[in-house]
Amino acid sequence: MRFDELGLSPEVMQAVTEMGYTELTPIQEQTFGLIRAGRDLVALAETGSGKTSACGIPLAEMVDPAIAGIQALVLVPTRELALQYVVELSQIGKNTGIAPFAIYGGFPMDIQKAKLAHGVHILVATPGRLIDHLYNSTLTLEQVRILILDEADEMLKMGFIDDVKFILSCIMNEHQTLLFSATMPADIEELANSFLKDPVQVALNREEVSPQSIIHRFRFLSEKNRLQVLKQYLQEEKPAQAIIFINSRRNGELLFRKMKGSVDSLEYIHGNLDQNKRTSIFNRFKQGKIGVMIATDVAGRGLDFSGVSHIFNFDFPRELEGYVHRTGRTGRMGRKGVAISLVTGRDLGAVKRLLKEKGIPAAWDGKVPDLKRVGAAKSSRGPGRRPGTRKSRPGRQKKKPAPRT
Ligand code: ADP
Ligand code: MG
Image 1 (tube, rainbow, N blue to C red):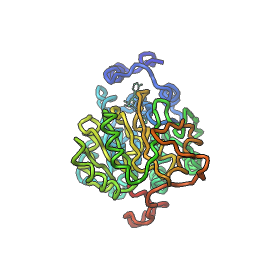
Image 2: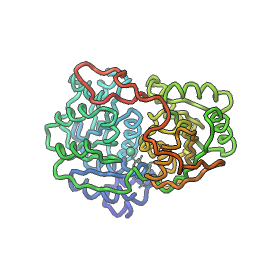
Image 3: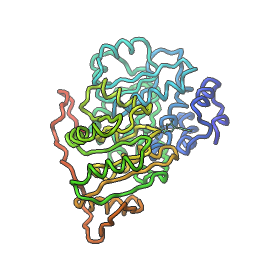
Image 4: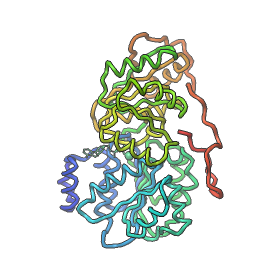
């Protein structure tokens, strides 16, 4: 189906055309009519399938720029996703006069407050910062008619369940709720059952299944050779852009220091960077100005980098879902991507499970390990999460500690 068959307003149609979109992606096709008809929705779709615009395009038409106040609220798990969402909404809505705005932690409340007072139609927010503003009465959700939960499973995984429930209970106005998630764990189901009205469930290729556009390769090696092999890969493969994932900030720090001299335009992004730095790296990477980015899983979920040709797992991810999310940063929108995982003896159990459960074909560069002899271990390398070490606001207990990325 094509966008020009949808009867979009000329303002939105023009913007969509300028964005280079002609055909709807499957998730857009399946959700557009439902969203427009005002239905509540639970949508499960793989990464890179165009969920932002699936919401953003109908939203641009449903929000009335003549009415002051937040008419649509989008909750996202991370700051980067908030920014990414707003950029896309701004493009879609650029001829309509609607004002989207993002609020997230690590940025001065005052500046956000001033902007909020100026009239924001669509607010994109991380749960914690939204609650801070609610507590400070610097925003009101009284006008909200459309609520979107993006990457809902990730939000819950990060320990935001109580925050999300609190926010949902603050929206008294009659509203439509759209819940987007890669997976459907029990807590999402419960959330949908208690807060959504007769939702339609749309399930496309679930995120647990890795997109077809990605070629998965594995390299069996000893731990001490990883750096050298990684450098070799970078030289031989000449990635247009690459992300190298590590499992802890410390590992990232070490790797960054060791590689800095030998790789041009290398950056390291992790959750503990100050927000300006984090945004700057993120933007420059998105614009293609950074060639190689070392990242913790903070960059693993939902972020849309169209130019990434290669994903490297320097550390094999602790969870198989993590593998799918990390590698989903390449091969976006049907483009080809390559994911190369460096695998040591102790990762073999996890690799075996990955190949089996996710239907990924085993392609080994070099030595092929004998997986038949390996027990399929539940988790692999890397330090475990350290629970209870993240600062939490008094009075707002998170159920699970957020991962320290
Ligand atoms: P998801 O949230 O499902 O992971 P995104 O919304 O980030 O996916 O979209 C992935 C990429 O696809 C973005 O670069 C977006 O601009 C692009 N995109 C979305 N819809 C279309 C479309 N209909 N035609 C072409 N590109 C699209
Ligand atoms: Mg998304």
